[in-house]
Length: 152
Image: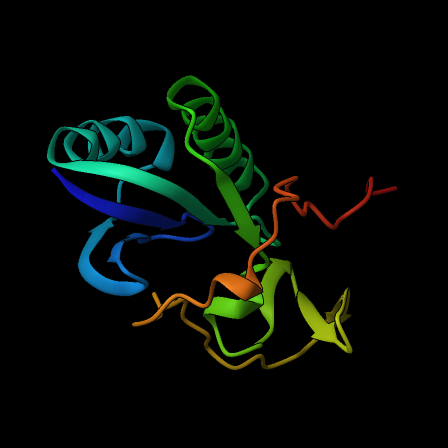
């Protein structure tokens, strides 16, 4: 069985999953379905076809529910299958462009700090799977980055 690493970007639709061998992207899986519905199906197929050595994911900022679902699913899989889990913020996958929060608020990353900022016309940013995974960008701190406090 081929040994691979799996990267998940589930912050927006479509969700994107990359299969990496020796840091290089070999297969891309994309789905417009809800991550809660499709992640188990996708991973069943992946685990039947490959030996997964490492799991990676974008831990936010983005959709609360999408982050929560991905984290709980991947953390559970990590524990059950003894596969290490790593995370990086979503800006790694969209060339550091603003990420939609709510209304006209966007998440921005300035000097390694993530904040919210009102932007009237934000550029369209798309998350992309890198052709080569730079493991140095990822952390073993996989806690989700929810970023927005309580709305008063």
